[in-house]
Image (cartoon, rainbow, N blue to C red; front, side, top):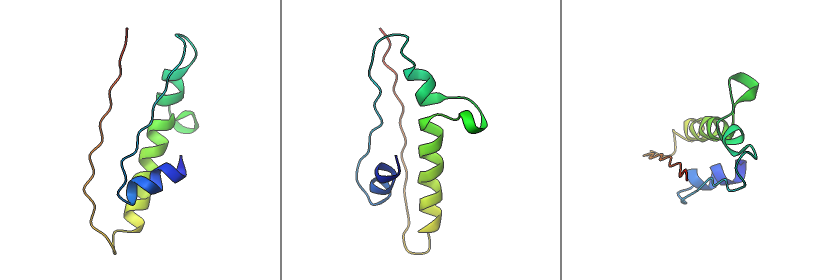
Length: 72
């Protein structure tokens, strides 16, 4: 995920996409739980905002995050 987050901070569009059979664990992988059980969403966003904070002296950022779940 780190290269994708870096690309997003550099100004490129990024997408996290999960596809697979029903019951294969996509939702758990993406959403996860609390603490060390965090999913990809929480980890990627934490990394995104940490990277932006690190670069905040050099750049000003505008962030837009969207989430869509298609079911059935």
